Length: 305
Image 1 (cartoon, helix red, strand yellow):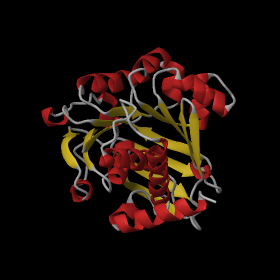
Image 2 (spheres, one colour):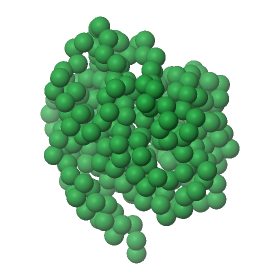
Image 3 (cartoon, rainbow, N blue to C red):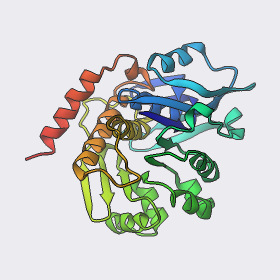
């Protein structure tokens, strides 16, 4: 089962208490796709400039990611740079250069249109909606958003997520979108907006899965060293949706048990934790499915009593 991922492929510059890297592969679609590739076939839709390195293309291809939808145009690839606070719970954006991403208009190859699983990264809601409308056979479709879209493009965003099966956001975004300060009340309001599955990502504290009459809480994985949390939320999304696609679940028709959704959330947390162990995407150069499944079993043990 193929998962279509739409979003940014970028270069990042990151400084944390563990060091600094001036330029490394990043972007939401990159992290999502790499994480999901351990579970299912992934097809990426993104744009890069003519400065995009062949070695980075090779890394994506080495994970079996379909790159037909990766458009290369004249100019520079999207670049972001940031510096994390000592506790790495917050970061300061130093540079944002949209470059070729400023004119990103997702183009889905014909071979992608019949795929049944769709994850829309953090892009303009109008573009998310346009992609969703092209894919008629999806068993589940959804994605994430951010404060900027919630504040400045609220009506477009609400119209877009009305047609989604799931939404993945953090707790501050959930409170802003719903207008509620209590996370449980916020979730209830969001579930009335269209998505029938909501995952609220809480960084080092884990995540909460909400459905109409139930919720499931998974803690964060305790790492001895967090080198770089950049992309961890996107890796969570990749693990969550990748597992669901691997199993062939029909989230659109609500044909899935709470237990299987809980497994998907745990796999999401597992992938987010591995992302933090090295700078950027470096951990994915050596990560194996055996390591992923072993950490999943660790999660199972400390979430049961």
